[in-house]
Amino acid sequence: MRTRQRVSVWFLLWIIWGVLAGCTAATTQPAEVEANAGPAATVSSAATPTSRSTVRAPLLFVDGPREGEMGIVFQNGVECLGEEAQPIQGSTIYVSPDGDDNNAGTSANAPLATLAYALCNIVPGQTLMVLPGIYHESVILGAFGHADKPITIQGVVEGERWPVLDGESRRTMGIAFVESTNIHVENLEFRNYTDEGLDLLLGSDFVLRHNRFIDNGRASTDPDADGEGFGLNIDGVQKVLVEKNEVAGNGPNAKRWQQYTLGTGINTFELTNGIIRDNDIHDTVGGGILVEDGADVLVENNRIQNNELDANGDYWDGGVWVDGSKNVTLRNNTITGNHGPGVVLSDEDLQYPQASFGFVLERNTITDNLYGVHEWNWGQCPVSDESIIRLTDNQFSGNSKGDIWCQEWLCSDESPCGGN
Image 1 (tube, rainbow, N blue to C red):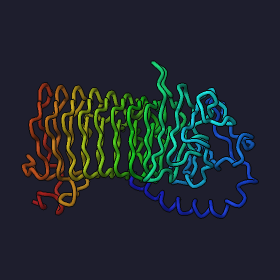
Image 2 (cartoon, helix red, strand yellow):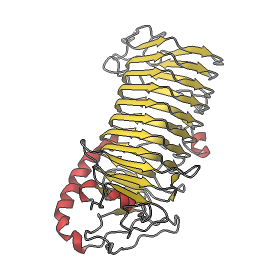
Image 3 (cartoon, rainbow, N blue to C red):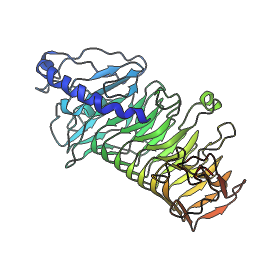
Image 4 (cartoon, rainbow, N blue to C red):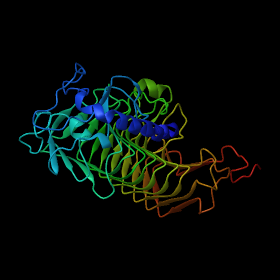
């Protein structure tokens, strides 16, 4: 995961390429996006829509898996850069599986057909209305958005009919935002992607609300993920609100689990100023929520239950796992029925005292797990310094192997035990 931050170098090279290639864009036919038909879809050339005077934004289709221009390994998807967008007229854009990319896309009666075309041409201040139906697509977006004007991707739910992005177990992720800002994603369902439903890499100011992440991460192709898979993956991002989502059935397939690989429902690495609240996370092969090397993160009012945390009898993961972070609060969560620890607090990479402190658990209900709270790798048990871990007014019951499990683990010169 950490090596993916090389993306900034790729961006610089791609931006230079875009400037050099811009003068020929009008005479070059871009690759067409993957058709909604699914497995039989192919890449073809496409004429410029007759309803517009501008050319389509260049799209790079990868049938991979291979590393794309933005440093993300993916397959069967399209990637595009924000500065290459050809704006669609109006403040609101519509897309439907029954639409046509030659339509104006400015009304529900004349929607576009593909998320790739709509997303690759959206600009700050616009809203994309995603109409119900199934979208067999994967779109990687680089440097989209602006701090002053949000880009909103709003699913339209009609009764039980949702807009569903379906990876058909052969596409890497539904949507990825790389070095993007001020993006709102609401009312979409992401299912059956090999690595994750939605991927945020670098960037800031995201709102992810009332989405569904179902059965993703079964067969990760990302060499940096060690075979893990996620419902939602957030890497190196600042200012994120993750609220009122359902995250269910994500994580590696049975074969990978038998090789002691676990995934995560909501996976975060180096998240700063994040709020994760009011989500339902359940039936993950792995942990419900991971906050790794984060800072100033609030995890509250979530329901985290029935997650499988057994890695061949080694219970290092948890319903919620906080590791190597600074100032993370878990408040008013219901953490129940997990096969392993309800909460894990750790200093895996021996970062204390520079990090791995300020872990606060207050008013959580932690019941019917294998363990309540698992603390490890501070070189002392119990961890008595409340500047490291503070537990206040939590309710424990029915945790079959105990409410608190502490392991000193290995000592080093940097750990609290100081080499004793």
